[in-house]
Amino acid sequence: MKNLTITSNPYNDDKVVDACSIFGMMDTTGRRFSGKDVIRAIGNMHVRGNGLGGGFAVYGLYPDYADLYAFHIMYLSDDAREEAESFLSCNFRIAHKEEIATKPIRAIKNPPHVWRYFMEVNKQSKTQGQLDDDYVVEKVMTINTGLADAFVFSSGKNMGVFKGVGYPEEIGEYFCLEDYKGYLWTSHGRFPTNTPGWWGGAHPFCILDWTVVHNGEISSYGINKRYLEQFGYQCTMQTDTEVVAYAVDLLVRKHGFSIETLARILSAPFWADIDRMPEDQQKLFRTLRQVYGSLLLNGPFTIIIAHEGEMIGLTDRIRLRPLIAATKDSVLYLSSEESAIRLISPELDKVWIPTGGEPVIARLKSPIHSVRKQVAATKR
Amino acid sequence: MTTTVINKERSGAVVKIDATEMETKTLNTRLRELVAGGDDKIRIINVCGQRYIGTDLNKPVDIEIIGTPGNDLGSFMDGPQITVKGNAQDGCGNTMNSGNIIVHGHAGDVLGLAARGGTIFIRDGVGYRCGIHMKEYGEQKPTLVIGGPAQDFLGEYMAGGTLIVLGLDLKKGEGHKAKYIGTGMHAGIIYLRGTVDKYQLGKEVGAAELTEEDKLTLERYVHEYSDHFGTDAGKILDAQFIKLFPLYLRPYGTLYAP
Image: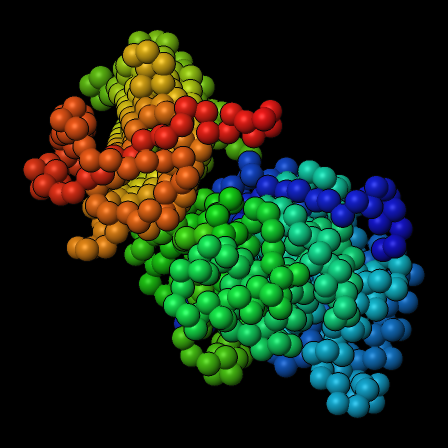
């Protein structure tokens, strides 16, 4: 995709602004449901986007291949696929591959070919002591920066991202998402204003099974990007949100922080607020701000982060973008607008407007391995 | 997108609109037509996210909304009374000129943004930046009455009008949580029921006890609030209130031109 950088962002100025719609829904019992309601809900916020990007992330998606890495790759040419597949077969054992089913609809123009691969890491090609996840991140970066016209946009286990240029409800129809089931769905409608919308620039952004959808502008993109590059993450999608996915992977998977602490790094409390905390907390928060200052997300944002078993809603410290949360029985909803939630669940147990910088977290009630068995038993 | 045929049923003088899957533009066009045609009682059911409801209407008509109206409810409105049986989203009462909005639920961010007249009653709490840049001139004076607590930046850059926050959800002994209250405020008044720490106030804000005149204003609006939502005005008024006022007329007068 090197050519795209030149064609779609000639100024190469790192600047992207968007004002979007986001929606997330998770059943904390692990019950899997179809994408139908999610598509309706995000479609209800149609006017927040402009048709230049829509997408979905689904968890509990591939119970038949739950322990294999599922790659979704978009190709702009047949040559690109040949080249990428030869790279994949050298570095992975491919258990199954197929073109992702799509339904031709008028609204979706010039789509790339999108394929999925279920794969195991090729143990021989790993360096000694390298973790599988690190190996996968490395290979995703190699494809996205090195191979022309091929893009890995989903690379986790038992989950998948579907995205492209169009309104989210159109993308949902195009990828037949009513036919898929998951226990956690996030979605996004895009309104890009500073760079052209393109298929890879739609949300969610994904690395391993971390995904992020975002409404706002990450003004600190340049600082965040340069910091992440030191750890091997290459930003290739030309959109600010990409840094959040990599920051989350670095902080939680590699540096071992809890989601609560992650939220306090990305959306750090003001120094004045830290001064009023109890002494031990002051020390902790000062240290976090000092060590991870380069991962503070500046500017207005609301994000929904998801990975296996968890969905997290978070806004900037002074909540310059909207977020509303609601619960009904075992389901937690996060949305830019309450009406989107009410459309699919008119009666709610609880509705609230979260405080800026404080994460709203939904977790599976039972540990993930038992859920895996359970979803494997019910299948798709 | 589909446009649904309007289901209009005349029941007495009340015109009913079913807004199921109706687009924002269709709904507001219909409202304009009805009001221009002399209808003055309208009930809209199944509202779900349609924006700007009541915008541009300039007669004292009654509009009842069942459901969740979208952003900028009653924006630029001049005269109608809108009652919402449900929650309001962001930007409710944006730049409204006159009329009333009564919400039997909560409201989102920037309630009453740049309002220049009219009254808004919210039964429960509200989001960030409520009353931001409200203004007044002569007889034109907006008033917001909020039953629950408000979130940060309440009354930011306030340039007129009255903001009343009752904080009825706060537990005994619990203070308001909003920070940066009245940041940049340079006119108007905020009344808070309950307590607030100094650090929660913007640098441009002073705090004082209520005068007799303030108490009369408060009594009037608290009684009106209680009439709308069936609460006990006496009980609400039997509490500690403070008045917040701007310390400077032009807090940033020398920021760019010292």
